[in-house]
Image (tube, rainbow, N blue to C red; front, side, top):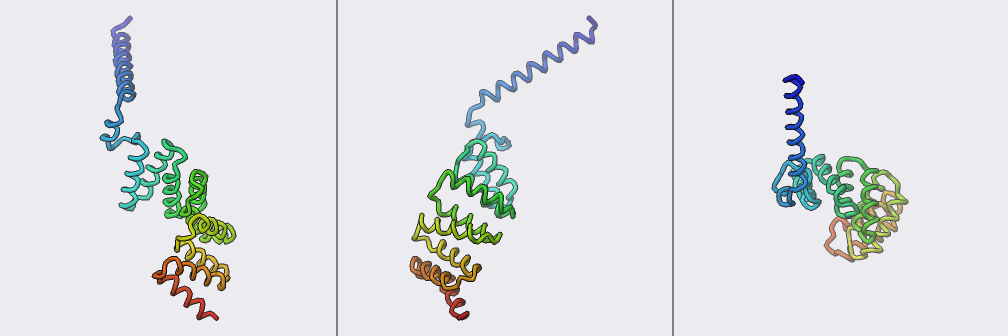
Length: 194
């Protein structure tokens, strides 16, 4: 065996040992070490969500989405994470993707009126009024004391040119929240049309 071959075998053994040692440190790493390592993407889902919220506040929607997507991989079927993915997707203009995330969130948390409201608003945006109407009705069935649901539903009814029904929804919003000035203003606009 030549000196060159002996050196190559020794280098291969050395690098094999280094790779083995590195793998061992990854497997033995404690959760606290992960939390202290800011560059690592292997945080627990709660830490990823926290970092995503921070990125969102800074206006970095892509980073926020990336972190939430990673949290979703690690904690599947978490309605809050799915809802946040839907929210950011909508902010980015990815309406169908946002609807899909919100629907997944509703599959996990069927009694979440906020998710129904979000889906309805997105359907309204793409002029799928029947689907939007169904989700507003479901949101109101879950929480009939949320004035925003009545207000948003009324706005949809205006888009559908159902002004009498819209006025009724604005009035219900005012019944829940008598200080809801936007609802008062919209009622006046409807009165001006007749």
